[in-house]
Length: 103
Image (cartoon, rainbow, N blue to C red; front, side):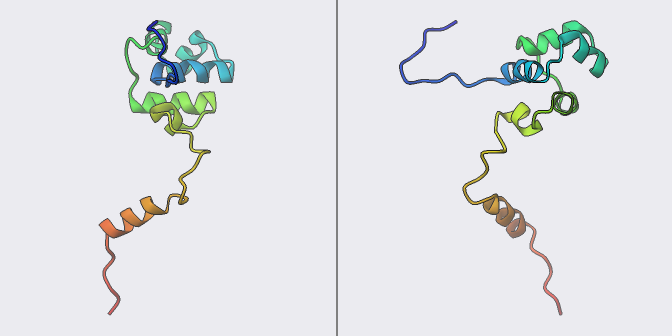
């Protein structure tokens, strides 16, 4: 482990979040492997950061462990919310896809 710099907090990476979600759901490595129909070693490689699962696998992982997919994938807690309630994203989508005007 690297030396900690004062004032810096480590951010969990994908492997950390995968392991945390297993603990949160009280799901074992073998149980997750059986659920995903992959080997125990594949799950071990993911939670130890040696490899990354594909998106479909992460979606199933999130469903099985009960964590939000966006948190598992990106580390973003959807409960924190956007300050504007997601309005900027909605506006950007609307502005990039203008609707034809009514006659």
